[in-house]
Length: 197
Image (cartoon, rainbow, N blue to C red; front, top):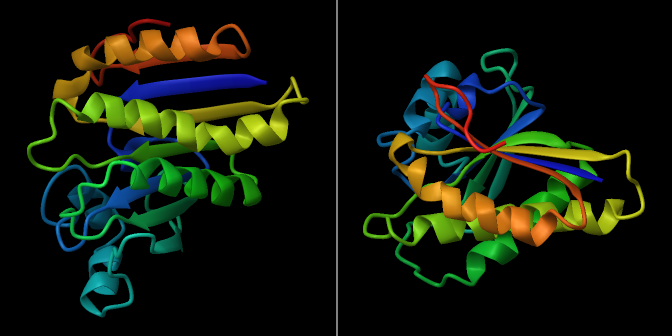
């Protein structure tokens, strides 16, 4: 089995893949950060769903939306994280593994992910991102362990200022998976060449 993990400064709406996955906090994802442009590209559709109460971003809530060609991916999966006040770190790996199982059941093996950062957790974010990589990939590794021809490609859309902080994360992922899998871990900069193939 081949694992291709990329950390990219490109936003979700600019990534070619089968699906994009956005983990979102309640009532803030459209007004701040990287996901506001995603809603703009979707014609404000996500904001209208939130305003109508159809999508609340409650913890564990998921919503699958067809992109209808508005972004480069075919599908958009929104994953609610609540209001962000719950600091229980153990919840996230369990939730992201569940998202991995959903994507595996949909036969999606090429997807992009954005994991938001809560205010004040800048130093913890790389470790959370590393745990997310592992838990999202776990269902695929379990299901495909006997299928060497299968490939999982995951691009993590990150804020630009995190690129340098991810080199130790990339090294740890190489150490953890490199001996058991055909592995590529790359940090992509938006306006420069990729680093650390």
